[in-house]
Image 1 (cartoon, one colour):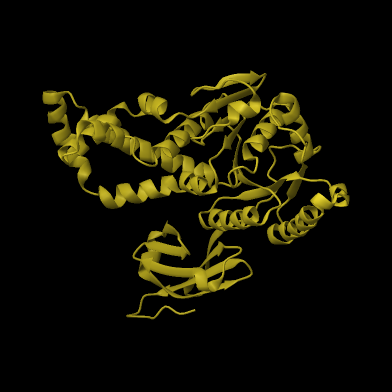
Image 2 (cartoon, rainbow, N blue to C red):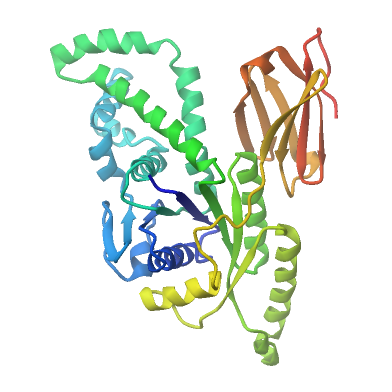
Length: 397
């Protein structure tokens, strides 16, 4: 079983693949059996490593393997019966055969296939460290929230379907050869694996997200939003990597002066905004970074003498505390304005909305008998107070 999982994310083009690959090489050189896998549909990991990579792990160096996850290869490997189940459902709905084939690769399957590979290798004895070179920030949030979304979908959309699929499905398989019952069982097993890997990814002692950014306004803003939502979803961010920093001496060149001055201001903003997270700075190498040698240089610049697998920062992001006759739910939410926040409770679910991002928390069952009394947002933390139900009570701030 792997002891550490690292996930690199950031706005497209900031160099997250470079940083992920550099970390993987550094870890392998330090003696860790390492796998770096790309979950980005627009793979660039093979370009960064300057080595051909396939849908199965390929050896790059001693103790280092790399993989670019392929959706259709993964469907054949994992989801043969599920694909037949989906095709049957779509055909029942009157969908044309060719369209059904395309729809069988439903949105989210790419992220799910990467999570299944991650679950497989995490529970094997092949690797000490697994590094995920993820898609850009928005897709990463989809990747990380998929286990929770699918749990909600299975619970809400199929609460009574199991018996139907397993009994009627057996008859269909006998007469048509379509493994409907097996497909449903595989679907349940898939959700169970996604639920299990979610527990790994949300354990900050095992898994860490590392935010990669450049000292640029829009990149920093997206990193802030990503940090907020990662905290909201319960994932630990243990470091920030600021990539491609131009040297100050370029300020002597009139053509670069304004850019370097702005860069200095953005670096100050990053320091103040993401503290107390460790912030690693990588200077611009003034050349395109690919191949093992240059990636080793980047790894040295990021970590110095530090072990790249260590947990650089760890703080609980989701806690429930009992105070007298009420419970307090504390969620760390940096960079959130009160006017952008909505909190609602629906039975055993807590729905937190921050602008266009929503998270459905499944509350502990006992909190179903409690209701939100009020909530407070202060010092980068959302505190929600639950009291026993006693008739209608207005939600207040």
